[in-house]
Each structure stands twice: as structure tokens, then as C-alpha cells.
Length: 454
Image 1 (cartoon, rainbow, N blue to C red):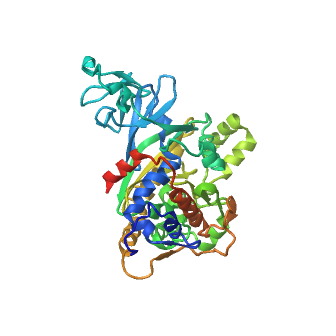
Image 2 (spheres, rainbow, N blue to C red):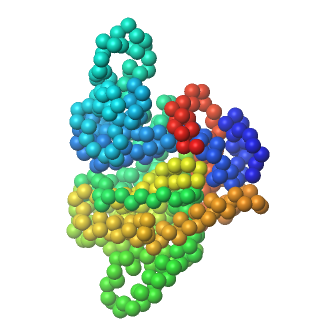
Image 3 (cartoon, rainbow, N blue to C red):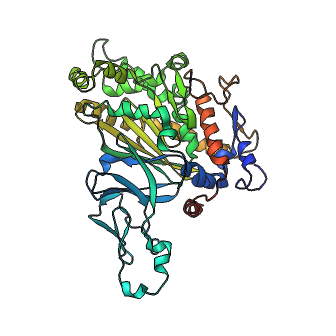
């Protein structure tokens, strides 16, 4: 391991962790770097928080945590969605502790009963006379709840924890087309979260999981037990006999290296990418005829052909959101510590579409992503052993050399092969940019919350 020193005060030290075609193991192991990720990377980027369908009515809320900061996402009376820090301005008590619910017309702190409107503005304080003549009115404590920069796009709600920074549209750019494609798979142009959520906590760094999402080379070896078993069972079915949905979903995990080479990929600025721009293991699935007819009626034939032709393996909205356009599923990566990561898996239901599409998504999530999955446990075993083994003696560098032949700097957007590790290299270039900037007024609240994690 490196000698003890502070990355916080040495941006150049952070830049040396990524060496164009390899990354230093400290990015997975060093706790101070995780603290800086909370303060800088997750604060400066736009991070997915929730979906509008989770808060359909005024006063409806969900709670979550981003980079150690407790957040509440709540629907306002005017139909907009607001995200705020989930802490009372009085003594910092958490205002709502349930994962979801409805607060009515105002928040009420369970500790001393201070109340706030749903937009965070202060409403009432018990024993008001006791504060007359004090400095309360001049302090932050009297200003209500702290709002976080919020952006809603096609029902997806994102937050930027830093008070100032890159605009939402500038941060995601052309990647917003992935969300357009998802929403337009509904004849009404709307999606909703359906079927609950799978949650898995794994003992590894969050970037290991994110790299795996865009790694096309591992499935044929890592998931051999799943696809080989599916292949053996499939041989029992007659050629013209319909196979169970589960077999259709597992068999493609045995796709060859050549398959992914031809599948294609694309990198975008700010670490975003798409794996499977030309094809993927999800290409060619049959769709109900009435579903396509409903889409054409809503969007027109040219747009529908464009929508259904887009079936990537994974689309990553860096740093924490991974989406499959078909089946319509979404993974949200929530880092908990340098060696601990929560992944949440949601099914997205296109409103007005046949229920068969939702059933296909729910089946895929159970098979591939649930804690009892026949696929995900392979990945988790690798992640957790990597986390332990990287701390051992020996070469401190992790290779990202595949298909790296120079000329990549400033190369996004760019189309590449599906096996090119430039998807990861592009991610780490953005990581370095966000981590290496020491801005004035770094978010002190983020720092306090990250300190609590250590």
C-alpha cells in the first residue's frame, strides 16, 4: 500500500491513480478516497434519487441516502417534486424515517414538533415566545429545510448535492435519449415503478460493480454454471416447442466474445456509456402484435422502429444508474463505504403496455439480480474476493488495457467494439476530473455525513 498521506490536499496524487490504461488499487481500497468521493464526485454529479411514480400524490414521499446524506423526495401540491435534506433545522433529527409514505400538508419533527411546509419553509415552532429576543431569526436554524438541486426528466428524478455546478442537461447530454427511449416504450409516454424492489448489500467497492455492468467479456466464464445448465435443459425441448421464458433469458449469457465484439458500444462525456449499440443479449425478443400497434398509433411508425431497434445490454448514467431498455429494468448503485455497496433493482412498467412486458421484466430481475439469483451470486463472489485480494502484496495496478491503442483523450463521444475497456477508462477519466477539482466551499454537510460512515 501507499505510504500514509492525504489525497485531500494533493489533486495531482489523485490524478496519478489513473494511468491511461490502468487504475491503482487505492481507488477501491482507500477510505480517504471514498470520503472524497462523497464530498466531490457524488456532490458534483447528478445522481438518481427516485421516480415520480413513487410519489403520485401531494405529500407523498420516499427517503433514501446519497453519499451518506439522508434525503427525502416529496411531491408538492403543484405537482412538482422536491428533494431536501431529511433533517430538522432545530437539532438535526430525521424528519421521516419510513422508506415511503405521506406527510399530509406539512412535516412535523418527531423530537420537538417543529413543523415545515412540504417545500421546506418553516411553519411553526412550539414555545415561540421563548425565542423572542434571541438570535434564532439570524441563524440557519430558522430558515427551514435545506433543498437540493433537483431535476425531473421523463419521470426520473435526479439531485445534485453541490449548491453550484454543471447543469442537468449539460451533464447528461445525449444520454437523456436513453430515458426518452424508455418512456416512449409506453403508448402514453409514461413509466411507473412496479413489482417492488430487490436490494443486495455486497462487501465490495461500488466501482467494481459499475465496471462489471459494462464488462462484456466476463459473462461466458463467470456465469457458465447458469447458461450451461440452461443449455442442457433446453436440449430436452423439441425444436418447434416454445421454451420457458426463463431459458430464453439465461441462454444468451453464453454469447461468445465475437458476439460482443460486433455488438458495439459508445462512450459519452462525463463517464456515461452504452454497451450494445448494435445488438445485445436482449435483441430479437418477440413482442405482442397489439403492443406494437399501440405504439405506432401513439408515436408513429418511424419513431417506433427507432425505439424497438434500441436494445442495449446496459446504459450507464454515471456514476450510479444502470438501465436496460428491454427488459425495462433499472439498477441503482448506492455506495455505503469504501468496501460496502447497496444495489437496488427496480422494474419499470410502460403504462398502457401489455402486462406480458412487466412479467418478462420481473422474471429477469428474479433470475439475474435478486439476492437468490442464479446469476448475481457469481458476480458477488468475484467482487468480494477481489476486494480482499487487491489488498495483498504484489502489483498495485488493475489492468484496463484491452483495445487501448492511444488517441483516446477527449475522444467522447465515440463508437467502439463491445469488448473495448475504453468504457471503463472513460469512466475513470471522469472520476479523476470530479475528484481532482478542489472547489471553494466544498459541501460541509456532505463531509459531515461521510465522516459518520468511517
